[in-house]
Length: 158
Image 1 (cartoon, rainbow, N blue to C red):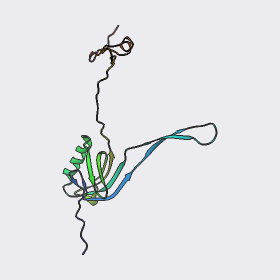
Image 2: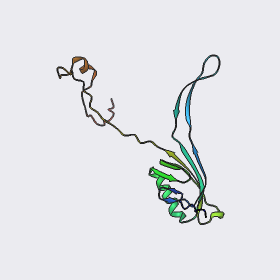
Image 3: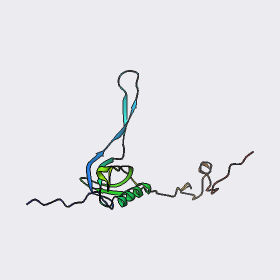
Image 4: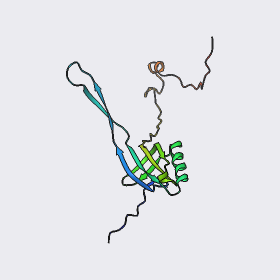
């Protein structure tokens, strides 16, 4: 006897009642430079973050799920989608809903998710002093501005 698939399709905390289309897209930008004769020269390629388009229906507890989807988008919450594929660290960039008579207690949706990479800031100390004398050289003193904290300044009218 075949075992039934009991895995639920989820977008973070929301159980998606039906996902009829799951379409991942991986794209890249290529720079093209024109030349006098022949074809353009392409010399660089930059991979763009992947996107996933989901289409389906929600029936059970539809108002609460719709509000949660809107909250995810408004707060730019990092999400995990588990369906036929698993996508982590995505944000909800587009949410289209259709409230038709065929799905009177729920709604049909089209959702776009986009992968995001989180940058981690790093700070480090830059030493501009002469390593032997431990004093700032005249050469580097003219090239390095003294540390200041002027804050925000108002524009002065003349």
